[in-house]
Image (cartoon, rainbow, N blue to C red):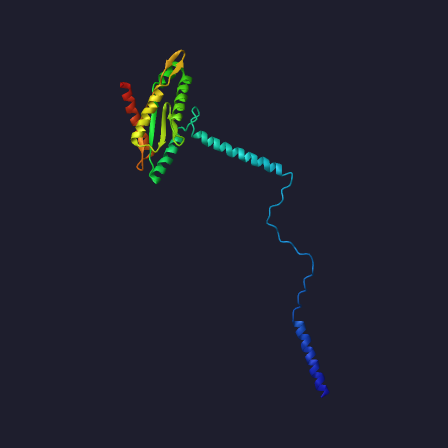
Length: 231
């Protein structure tokens, strides 16, 4: 009986040793220490030596953007008179017609041509002609609203984009501008001269197109110029 008990205990001990040898050793417990901080997503601090460089670069960028704005504005502005040139005026006219079509507004386009400017240029020089053009633009600016647009189409031809005018009011406005410009006088080398102007009108409504409106007003202006020659 004792022999059997000893044999059983020996077998049990052998199985325990064999099982312990077959099992993998448990990983060691992590050692206690300082916590590791997660990587920060914030940008690195700017050193004091870098700040002046950044300020200079920002100033250069601001200056370059301002210069771009100036160049874009000058591309649409008449350098002599400070009003939109043909490109700038046509851009404003297209915008106005788009607005008129969307909101069923109204307006008028007046094309105005200066009379007798070429003889003044030929007799007294282009500086005299420039003086006449500046005086006429000053008159136009005094007789339109701030929402209206005056542009120089080229040479001695101007265009006015005017809001909320009926056809009758537009023709009356064109006649008034003619009379005001006709009363202007200029003195060159002791001679007193007048220039004058002829104006044509096109109504802007939901059916208007920029190119067609300019052609219509321009044709009406030439008809008016022929009438004034016979008056």
